[in-house]
Length: 384
Image (cartoon, rainbow, N blue to C red; front, side):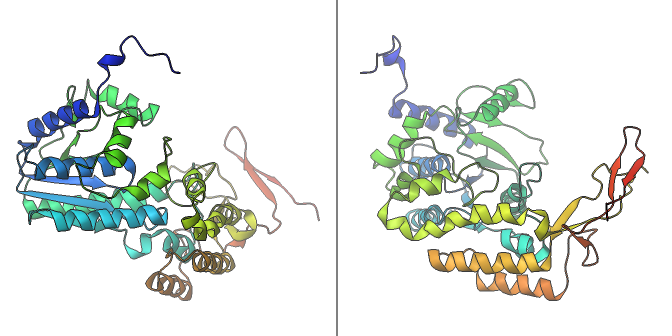
């Protein structure tokens, strides 16, 4: 048995955590007439959304003039997680007052993951070329929040599910904000911004431990929402989820966990996405520059003869593979309108900026070029 801590009785219970969150939301919420919730469908944002709706329905905090739930639908989430999020939004909309509404936020058509990659030809994201997160989630949410701010005519309060302990990097940012940029310590994590900003931010669940989140979602029925899908994905561990087949993670841990359950075995083909992305980053599927590029400051770019976008053949191969995978998995990764747009972009010969069909293929033999320490170009002729 685990040895009890001397301070075991001083640990926050779920009810203690709820009381602190209510105090936080009541204290800061009354400063704003319009609230918004940033919802991703994960365990922490679901816990936050369920808490806010429960607190309002039970009159534990004053009700704002409007509450808008903004769900960032990247179309790349694990399918049951996405389905659970949409079901949660529907339950919120059906069970609350008229001043509560839900908004599904998606990227513009040409910015969506597969349209951008297989239509425009941008290679799959990687840690040093992480175009996916800002494009699929951050920018669409910012635009939706800007539209909402324009509609209400004043700054909003944005509520998030951020908690201490989610990651060391995030904890460090929270600690730093307590002493600069108008960050305030105390109940929750409240960040103010300039009057011209779209919203101030409050994390009312900041102090919740992982066990509080699990107890609230899986064991406590006060909020009245069905969160069984989230329970299946996360289990009892602190599993971090992201896009299905994420090329930035070493393993697709959340999908692997889900496949332990018989009812999700049909999703097994999705495990093929991650190897496909890795394959598409190879030189044989990409274009390459044969001449060095001059920067705006008049210096040569250090990435001489860099690899670039996917070839048209690679895009066609990638589309065929993804359509096959989604067909066998019974999911919708690329819908008919997205497929039509991808094929239209091929017909229009669309390439990323500074690239064209005239660029060489990545595996074509070339004289090797590099920059010396003093910035001069050095050429090594290829051996014939």
